[in-house]
Amino acid sequence: MCQGTGRGGKEKTLVLYDISSTPIIRHVKVKGLARDDDPSLKEYWQKRQTKQGKQYWA
Image 1 (cartoon, rainbow, N blue to C red):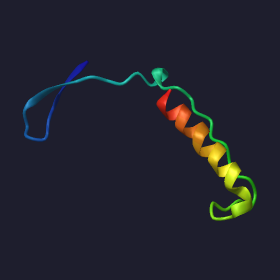
Image 2: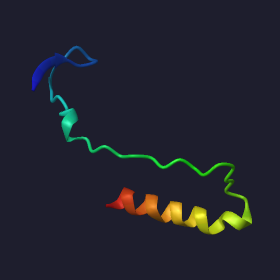
Image 3: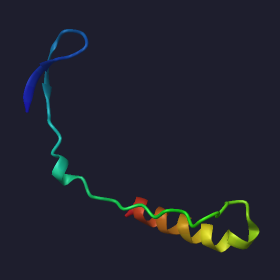
Image 4: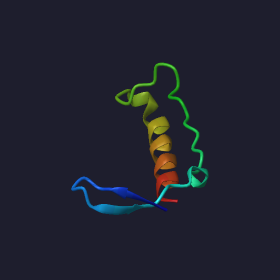
C-alpha cells in the first residue's frame, strides 16, 4: 500500500495489484474462413460458445 493524492486533491491510500496473481488465459483462433452465419458450422460455433462460457463462469 502507498499514499497518493486523488482527483480532488485529497490524500488517498492506494493498493498495488500483484500481477503474478493474474491467471494466463490462452485464446483459440477461429478456424480459417469460419463465419458465424454459415449453417454448416453451427455446431462448431456452439461448442466454442459453450467452452468459453464454462471458462468465464469457472
